[in-house]
Amino acid sequence: MSLDHARLFIVRTKSDAAFRDRYTAIDTAPARLAFIQGEGFQCTDAEIKEVMGELSDEDLDSAAGGQYNHFNLT
Image (cartoon, rainbow, N blue to C red; front, side, top):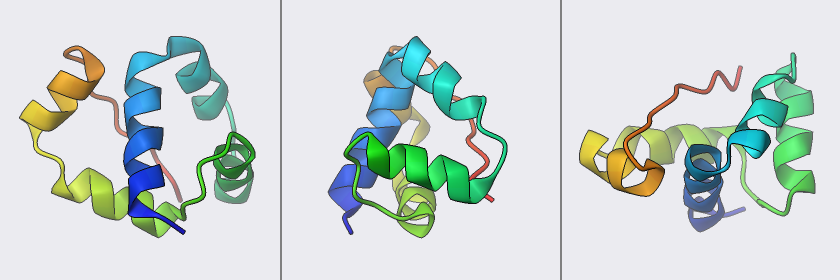
């Protein structure tokens, strides 16, 4: 699994509203992880949480065009 893929997933959720909407509509953590991995992001929920914790607000703003959303992975 990959922290790089976790970073790419976060960037995609910030820049692609349709992708973000599909992801946030999923109700369970296992289904969300299956969706993430089905989209080609080979990472775990722990890796996504780790990356979210290490990114500054400035990093998130630059990646997201000024948007930040919290994603509940559990």
